[in-house]
Length: 608
Image 1 (cartoon, rainbow, N blue to C red):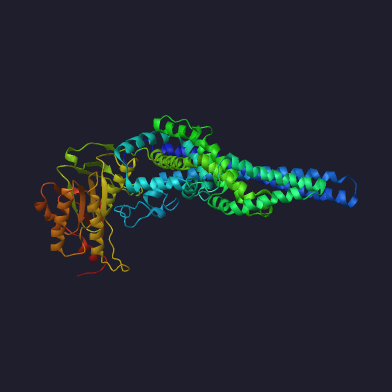
Image 2: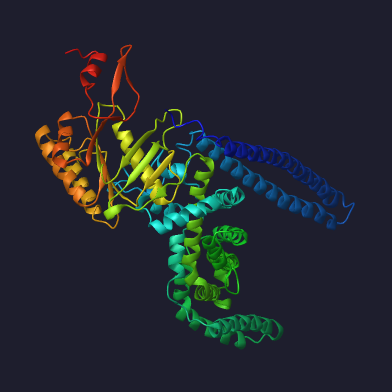
């Protein structure tokens, strides 16, 4: 049975239809902006031609006064402003159209390679992220993330790779239910955030905002510096009127002393601001959009209210900082250099930045964290909206602190619907381990990933790919991929047992462990594999763990006698038809009764 179950996808066309309708709207906007762009461009050319003609009339023929040249210049200036607005509107429409195009691609399973892969969050030593394809091209992060800001991507990556406590998960589910219908909010943040992605480094900005004061603080010192600048201007005016130089020289002497004292400190303040003014203005637009959004959930209302508390909302404070940063960005210019001694340019700007930091710096981290949390929530909300057949998991209690996992018709969210096969699985106090046997390519590894990635989604607060999932909070530990390491001189078997040791260490955590082992201990002989697997499973069971182990070594299926009734044998099988190996990827009871290795060799011409 494919992932496109009857009834489960009853509403799946609705998000696609809505996206298509909005995409058509923006396509019309883009076409209209293109037409206006051409008209304004032709108008500018006409004004240039008219200006040249008027210049010939004024300068060559002297038929009219030169003041007439102001008219084409003013008109060209106005057309340039209009042209810029038209191009910005077109760019925003393009971004919105791309937002809906990517949404349709996700619904149609054409998304791989079109989004952010989260490669910077990849940790090859993570206890499950590599095995479950969380990051990288075609990974879970790329499917889920619609975040435009670094803090949003970081928050989503943390939820996927660390999970959350049960209280946070249940609250997040409610928030996602509210946010998934806020398509306008997701669109607005996507349009603004697309330009902001490369213009804001929140970590360095927060670090700068939280540093201690470097320059003398307080309004008195800022007033003194402003008074010195005004005194210089007055001294220059006095010299031009009276030809008396000593007042100006006196002020410049005091300013020289101030520069010797404060210039280096001022540059430390200025150079620490690693953000452009344009990026800050975009960030303020995002904050302003969040400030005015009407939320219903108490947590969202509280977070939005936090942005607006105080004498000014967060968006206004960031806009104020952006104006200071414009002056910082200009500090390397010629005019700024010329204004250094007479007007203390760097000190004045540094003190303005320092005053802003003193007033608002302590709140910058919270603003960044709130924005990141909202982007991560909206990413999960978008996934929920685009996959209405995917339900939220149900969290249950379990006796004696044991793990519990019951999934009905679970599928893999990274596999296209038409290719995905669903299976049901239950792990509880009576069946704590599934030992799944089967031939090569029968679906054992994919089955492990289906269970694992749906657990990741559940522990992140997201919907799962399946008909239903009931579980206790679970930690996750996997060993599905193992390769040798030539650089570190390690065999694949040694690499495998090192990783299994990490799973054992994680199994001592606060919540029960779900372990997923593929071809357990395949790098050793059959006898050692059986003894070692038996010991590993018993050790994990003592730690309250539940899990699934796969093997194509039928001798390993005999360990159920030693482990006890809590281990249950299951299998995948294959069939040969029309000289082709065929698999149905269906999980069945019992031990597999045949292997396909010899048949595969025969089919490719390796007769033995």
